[in-house]
Image (cartoon, rainbow, N blue to C red):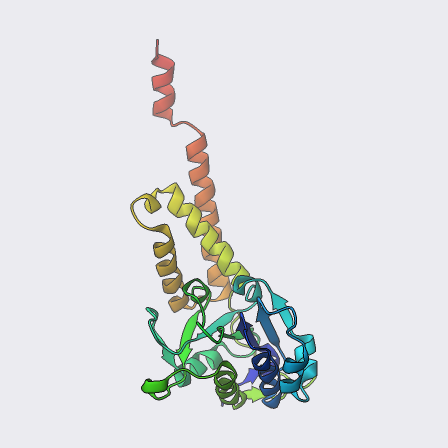
Length: 262
């Protein structure tokens, strides 16, 4: 049976858009292929102005209903699978061809929220923003001119995703997939990781930021389910609590030494 996605679970997120025309174009192409969720990160205040409306052409409802956020972390707090896009220049993270990324998206399937994240027209996604992406993909183009306009890139991805989507209709459904952790849950887990690194003084010898990013990549590669992620977060929380308790309560040997002191 062909894998199915629910179009209502797909979110297009545009980070730091510069040109209003691209915002309108993204709203239009989303609607062209049956998608209705548009989110903007650090968007211009006038993002619904004439230029954007002109390019939306019949999809002003998508533009009007779009949600705005200050940071990508906030925008993906309720998202279960975050797919970042890149032209591929100077990226240390592995880039999946779009066809492979689509396979992972369809594997996440119906019932999990999936975000396609596109960076600004000039510099794309920053390295810090990429840490919130479970996978990173690129559209294979001519290496001599690899970079696509952000709306063009979104159009290609939307077209490929639409092949697997059930119609956007009230009551439309497909078999739900195994629940994945949300972005908020992932951030809470890595807050516990950060505390643990501090407690064991690991970050004194190694760069904490670099280590955390590498651990995050390892975690994303493992693709844990929501239950597995909840278990891991719970263990880390209890471990940090135990270490805090040890730090606050003197050991038995220390208490004996204190009692014997003159």
